[in-house]
Length: 235
Ligand code: FPP
Image (cartoon, rainbow, N blue to C red; front, side, top):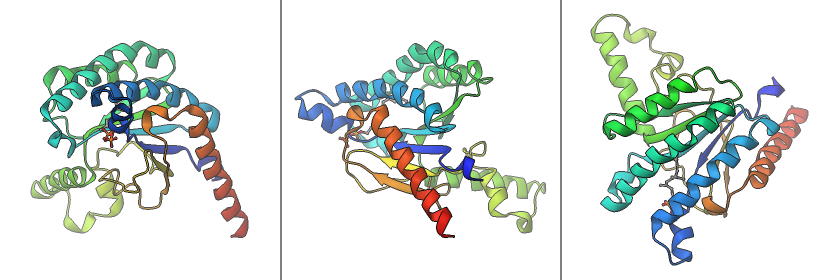
């Protein structure tokens, strides 16, 4: 049992905009700097026993940002995915996306499909990228799919359990997160993995995402593990 704790870490990558503003730069400069941090964190996972890393790239609420920021982010996602694809394959990283793909640009969506396909056999680290993701939106879409199953009499209302519902979520292939980290000092979960984080521990840290590094990440994971072990001893 113990070997499993801390295997799934989820991160709300916040503070890119402020990082850029502090330097008198446009917000997109912060997003680019933020994107560059991801590889280091992914590569730090195996050494600290993290099998699953889930990152929040774009929320269903982020469409409300200025059009230039939104389109800049979409271009960044597409370029970043293409550029990192070979590295991810070589590093044994399996990438999957969660969120609603329906409103995404066709080119971006097909780049995402392709990355999932070329990394499908990888097993070292499972990286899940939440893009156009919102916890309430995810549960709503899951319930719509579930209701359709009932309508078509493939399922009865009575058969719906927490486990059945979880199977309809975007995250059906993931264990629940053990630890959720949010950078940049905000103590909110902002609609991230609402259902899945029911028992997760949270770490709200001051560091802005573009300044976050593998050392701080590993320390947080090890701190989580020490805490788990202590509770384990008391019980
Ligand atoms: C939050 O900072 C960050 C985002 C909305 C975007 C996250 C995106 C990345 C880190 C870029 C790359 C990701 C992938 C998967 C390629 P903020 O803009 O809310 O910062 P602020 O709170 O300081 O304004």
